[in-house]
Length: 177
Ligand SMILES: Nc1ncnc2c1ncn2[C@@H]1O[C@H](COP(=O)(O)OP(=O)(O)OP(=O)(O)O)[C@@H](O)[C@H]1O
Ligand SMILES: [Mg+2]
Image (cartoon, rainbow, N blue to C red; front, side):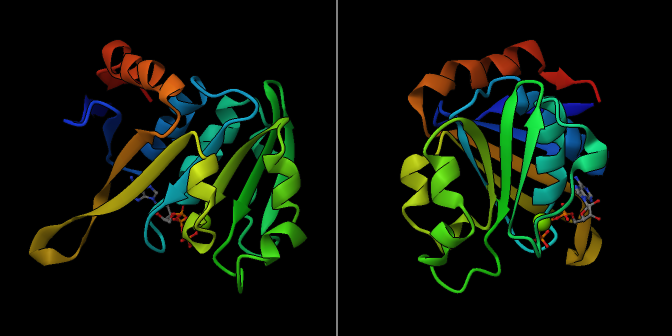
């Protein structure tokens, strides 16, 4: 079970994911409020679970999971899901912002795609284009070592998504994996 609660700012929701399956389930739940044209920023340190959550989003958007791989080296993968086209980018290896156009980012941001972006911090103006900002943190475990849980904070940067994001909590205060 994933716990979801509204943050005090009213525009964000906090999920607690106790393992990779739950991180995937948060992605699937979020996919339910997205439509083509939406841009999702996936933030968090190395190994936080950004790709895991992106796989859940892809699955929820109707992309066969057998096709979904990490764009760590390809920088951007494109899929055709039953709910529309999905682009999944990982900008970690981008040397500078101008390389974004070279990997096709500008094309998919022009519309017609749901765009998922890991390491969006590499291109500062991406935040102006984004619908949702997902920030994953690794919860502390025993003795200050990294634990097995993640907190996933989701902010609606597009005000039109605020209500549907809040409804996820009302509907699924506890999400079933
Ligand atoms: N909620 C969770 N609890 C524990 N482990 C998790 C959780 N979610 C994902 N993981 C695990 O964390 C590891 C890293 O996940 P993932 O590759 O998705 O991270 P990432 O943020 O995309 O990393 P990178 O910064 O290298 O792209 C994987 O082994 C994954 O199964
Ligand atoms: Mg990744």
